[in-house]
Amino acid sequence: MWMAFSAAAFALTLSLESEETPYPGVTLRAYTTTSPDTNTWVVLVDLCEADLHVESTYPTELLQTAGSWGAETGVQVAVNGDFYLTGPLQVYGDAVGGGIGWPLEQTGLDPSFSSSWYYGDFGWIAFGFDRVEFTHSGWVKENAAAQGLTADQGWAASQRLPPAAPGMLSLVSGFPEIVVQGTPMVCADPEDSSCFPDRSDMRDRHPRTAMGIDLARTTLMLAVVDGRTSASDGMYGSELADLMGQLGAWEAFNLDGGGSTQLWLEDRGYVNDTSGNNFGGSTRAVANHWGIRAGGSSDAPARPGHCEGQPACQEIPPGGATIDDVRDCFRLFGPPEWWREESIGIDGRSYWTNAWDSETSLNWAWWQLSFAEAGTYAVEVYTEPGFTAFDDAHYVVVAEEASEDVRVDLGALTGWWTLGTWSFAAGGDQLVAVYDDAPDGYGTDRQIPVDAIRVTRVGPFCGDAACDAATETWETCPADCAAPPEDTGDAPLPGVEDDPEPLPEPALARREASADRCGC
Image (cartoon, rainbow, N blue to C red; front, side):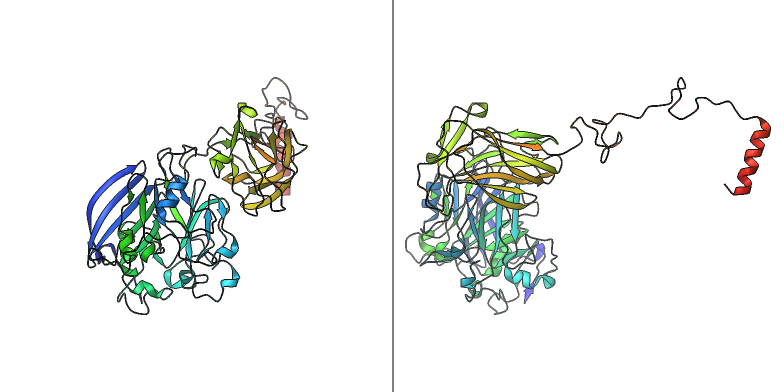
């Protein structure tokens, strides 16, 4: 069964052959190992590096090599992703790319696949705005007590098939889980049937790909191991877990391996032996991928995309604020050639794209929201006159982790108009988004303008220049409520005698005696 090895007891011997930084925030290491003999490459991604964003494959029905997808997407690093089937294309787990979730029927969440041997076994790692999430694999959740896990560790830790957390931009699944809360899942006998009971091919040596994150969720680790050649044996699942443990992974998952194993860099192509992994064939086209966008190579914000704990891109004060399209809180998604920029609108800039006949959005935009104070806020959207605006535009508001879809006829709306009113929590992880999908058959000749939004506090709050007697006092809100008058000795307070004369001695004695009788 499972055994937890201490750091001093790792069986795999790693020898660092080279280390370089090909792109800002990206470290590439080449290792050789003994017992087994392998060539292994590791990419360490600093999630708090400026201009760095983690990408994954947008919903697709096409297979692509990591190199083809990476070059098309414009990332600097790409590796293969989840296990998959064809006819139709379906990944074993969940998948999100470009902020768009894959259709249910193309994922391992689809109940129609419930009789499949892999159903519900996956875990995943996902990246959102200033956020990194993971969920445990199905096997680990079923054996949570034996692993010492609690319900607050991992996204939806007690739910075998959780939906992705709201606002996730990129998500790739894999299984088995090979490092759980800092413990590599290694076995006394890596070929025994008890070793990785949720996946039998972990008991043979194959080319491998793995993904992991550290405890602080500030480093993404991607590893590829060559195999099936005279120079590289591949690894057992237990050895792959050992590798990720030595790299410092807090959570790690096995990805599709074998002939799918591939690591591509923009300026040099494949760094591993992809043809050898595929029994001497060509590099295999796969379903989805991880990609690293680094070094300011696109129009993405210069602010790190997924660094937890960094200051808010724009903190909204208690009264509200305008969030424009020139700040780090705003971002466009989808093919840039289908966005048009105009020199009009708030701050002299705005964008538009066309609605298109699809149930899945391609081009979309968001405004991230981070509130200094929880409260109810009206959300307004600005539309510049002159657009032949679409009459069924799709907006989404995420407030307090609840997501609501709103359809709007933009045809008659210009200037500031109200999208709705929602209760927002203090802090971030909230947003307003607009999408270009038009599932009811509309054509591509209807424009969706994108400019600025405005949130305005509804109801009384501290700082609105009005003292609400029901909720505010001078002590709780000195900005709105006046201080009570003080006794200066010059004028009596209302209902109080100012500087009264002392009582005569007999009267004082009678009052004290009265107090003694009544027990006062």
